[in-house]
Length: 273
Ligand code: ARG
Image 1 (cartoon, rainbow, N blue to C red):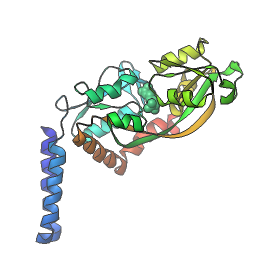
Image 2: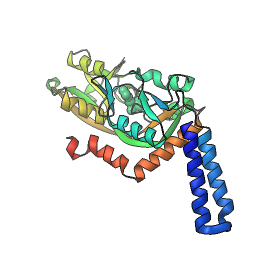
Image 3: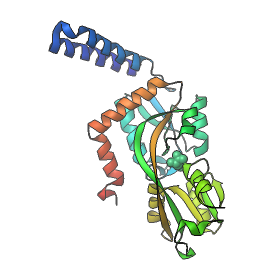
Image 4: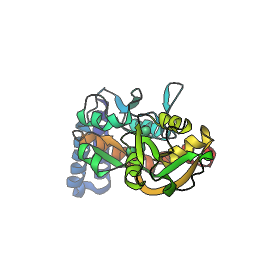
């Protein structure tokens, strides 16, 4: 497998470099680290040889969205870069219902990772492993401009729409007094429901509602930004710690070599406006 041979090359290279620099004195340390490299890479198993198979709910721009049938977005570019560092090709499955992704990864057999603006939560950690953090986020509350709502308190007892299984759904249940919180499968359905008057407000991740309001639903307004301090990470099966490790190594690499910053700038920088 390609991954394995890359590990062997890195391992051998490190050994040569270490011997060259420090001579015999560092033999122990260098053979240990090359053995570690071997262990980390040899155990790495992916479902479909040469590919990193990714499950995502492709309704979450600018993180992941469908454009002309293709997955596009910040996390899509990031996953392509991480896969490349690992000698793999990023392969997106057809859009997958958000609240089925964690159970799917935990059950195994369909995708190697779930990447969908997944907030790290203690509950999810019981079922799956998260990689290191790839992005920060918060919540935002959206209403129709002509609704007259100006703050969250006025939404007490109202109908709040949110994507099923999300932190936005939980936030609304816990924080909006007496609200009826209605779950929807897709973000697009949540926005359609607000526009048609089926719900009074939306609770979802701030960067995503900002994107939707700016680019599609200009008749809506964000009346509150809630500093929940959420952090996104990649979802991996607990049975595949070598994959989590390899992804963490790749995340560190793209952060160190400027790739991460370039992708961030493309989707969130001044030129993305
Ligand atoms: N960050 C939120 C969560 O983890 C929402 C993610 C929704 N993602 C999506 N691709 N629709 O629950």
